[in-house]
Every structure is written in structure tokens, then in C-alpha cells.
Image 1 (cartoon, rainbow, N blue to C red):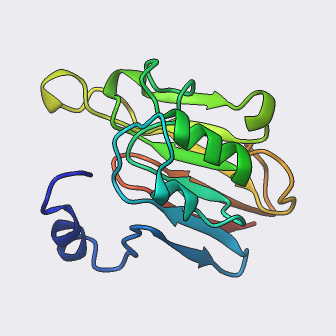
Image 2: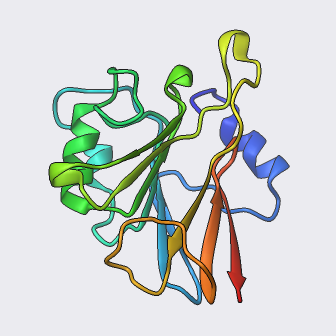
Length: 168
């Protein structure tokens, strides 16, 4: 989040997790690359942080949503342009609390599922249930979808992104 203590809080609270801020981690043995961005306000022009998103990113985690996808009509157009270039399978954001939900990309964003994982409603009290998304790891070209075993990753996306791999 954008609070000044978020990095310190995350490192103290999540001792067995990787904090991503303009960086990535690849989950093995699947080769699933997760990239987490720096906090940024929506911008209409060029954003140098978005240009750093790695081209082979499978899952993109941002604070705010891209324009037009679970964003309450206030998402970032520059982020959407970068998503259309990189074409990750999943984009997870929050920030716009009332826009909680899922959406599938269209046009140049097709093949990407967008998730707004915000769980707070008014007064910063929990108002939404967590969302679960499953990615088919047997076919990297497919958009995120619910799949049956033998292999899938379940992603619990609220309030903290976490991964659970299951082999069937």
C-alpha cells in the first residue's frame, strides 16, 4: 500500500513471503513470474515505473487498477497501455474499494484477467469476500481460468496476494 510504513510492516508480518516493489519472483517448478510494482497514482502520460514491468510477467501486482477494468472509471491509462504490451495472464490491484471484482480483458488486453482485490468498504472496514483465481499452468498461452488437477495454482488475492500450489 502507499503508507510510509508498509514495507517495514510487510517484512515484520510476512516473514515467509517475498515483498515485491519494482521486482519479480519466479515460482518454481512452474516458471510463473510474478511482478510487483511501486505505488503510483494514475497518470495520463509516461510512467517510468510501468516501463520496468518485465516482458515475461505472468502475474502483475499493482496498487491501483488499469483504466477500464475493475477501476470505477478512474484507473490508470498508462498502466493499461503497458499491460497491452506485456500481456500478463493476471493483473491484481486494489485501491478503488467499490470496484472489487473480476473482469476479462478485451481487444489488446484479451487473454488477461483483471482482479480488484480490495476488501474494504466505507470506513476502511472489510466489506468484500476474498477472490480466488486459478491459473492453468499446463498451458501458458491460455488466459486465467478455473481448471481441474493434475496441476493448478490457486491465488488468494485479498488482502495479501499469496500462492498455493497443488499437484493432483
